[in-house]
Length: 392
Image (cartoon, rainbow, N blue to C red):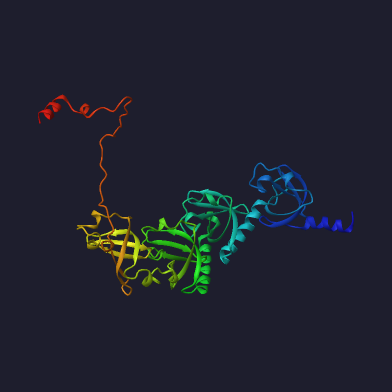
């Protein structure tokens, strides 16, 4: 035995270890359920399968090689047979716990795979340690179905760390809110009133559409969707649709949008198109007892007074007109300042047939086909009726 080996052997017997101490050793033998380490002590260290991993079915010979270096924690200095009982699994858990504690204290962003979707949230695993992300902290908006996250890697921070109670809480929402605020601030610095910008329809309501501008949402109010009348935003737009808008107003973080571009205002050339005496075509948009409002183009309505509908007396516009009906009329008055236009059908003698209700038959009429010759009128008259007719 060389001098070096002799000194090493002396050190083995002079070295002392304690429970809880972390030691490093070299694998000198591997069995399916046991690892033997030379830890530089008078006795070898033993790591059982249960103290290496939580996977009870793993074959240690497939994951550990002789000569490999391992760190382990001392559980017992002497197991009764003179061997040192070690744990690799608990040391790894201690290291992960320490790392997570530091991440919690420093607000570090962690990333891990979603292994389970639970009723109340998501289970994320980092180095065999489970972290729970409650449903309310998964997103910055309500998520009806969390199954889309299964198998995905998500980023989050720890907002609660209590390993003794096995309570480690992750928060993804806080990161999303912070990122959204950052992007919003960048967008607000970049845009100005009057800018033309493209966005994506994010949500539709009865009063308008929320447009994602790439950092913040803007509101396209129903009154700014068209120069004409809009009954329901859902008839014009769909979620996910790309739209070209201009910024009408910015107040704090609220952005008002419009698609009513000034250069497309139908009143720009109205004085020429709708001068008194011009003949125009329009569509009946709505009616009152005193007249009908006719849409000449979207955004330009004209009044057809009941007295100007026909040369014959008309009690109510609805007696002769219907919504959506196209008419031809003459412009008798144009007021550009007040944006008022008056029409007359009577002035050009337009014929308007009265609105009639279709007859309702209780039974469908069936036409009779005669093979020989059509029956005479007498065939439709009873004998009594024929006698009365003859007497007359």
